[in-house]
Amino acid sequence: MSRRKIEIKKIENPSKKQVAFSKRKGGLLKKAKELSILCSADVGLVIFSSTGKLFTHPESASNLERIVERYRLVEGRSHGEHPNTSFQFKSVQAENERLLADMRHLMGENLTQLPLKYLDNLEDDLKNARSRVRLRKHEIMDQVIQRDEESLIKIGEMAREHDVLRGTLAQLQNKLDNCNEGPPSDYLDDNAFDQDEPNHFNLIPPIPPLRLQPSQINLRDADQDLQPELRLGFGSYYKNS
Image (cartoon, rainbow, N blue to C red; front, side):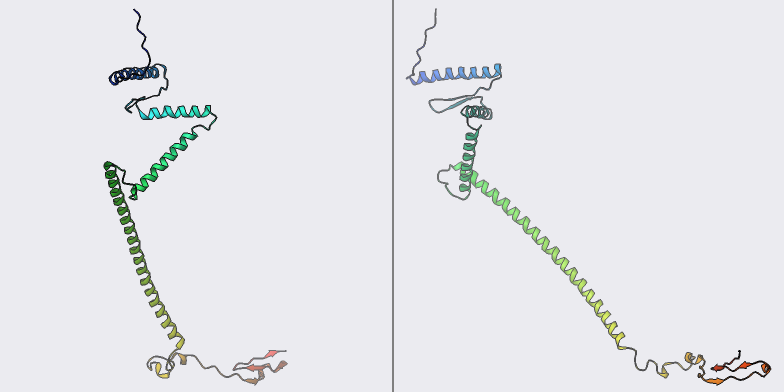
């Protein structure tokens, strides 16, 4: 007995339509899974029901996105386009729009269409950001205060060293002024020496004055021709010619 061939046409009965969708959707997903396992093939399947419910294979969004990206890469090459350029541009554009929307939300703009849960999360993010900003502000203030205290300590030490050097310079200047004034007037006065102490200046014998005298003839050497000589000071001698 042969099976009756089913006519392919739109099912108008909602209940029958739902039963047929469930059966055929399950079989299609089963076949896609078997094909990917048996043949090590990348199989991507996306199904939307009439009510808008989504069914995919593989179930992991990352794996499905990898398959879709691979498809777009091959499709772009077949049309002579740069690989993945259009997809990358759209992704960057979407990310840019999302970031701009987040910035507006953080500034308190465009909040009328946001749900309550999103607003709660946004409020928590702002509180956390405020706490981190305040903490960083206090850290910077502590660092500035510490640097100022260290600078004040160094300035105090330099001031003390300056005072010490100024005092030393004043003492040296006083000593120099005393040396430039010279000894007092009575420094070499006769009364400056003790009478009981010997006068060291008197220990030096007087030097006789220098005078010129004619030399005298030694009578014992009369038989010799002698030549008179000049005598300097208190000594004299004769020299043979």
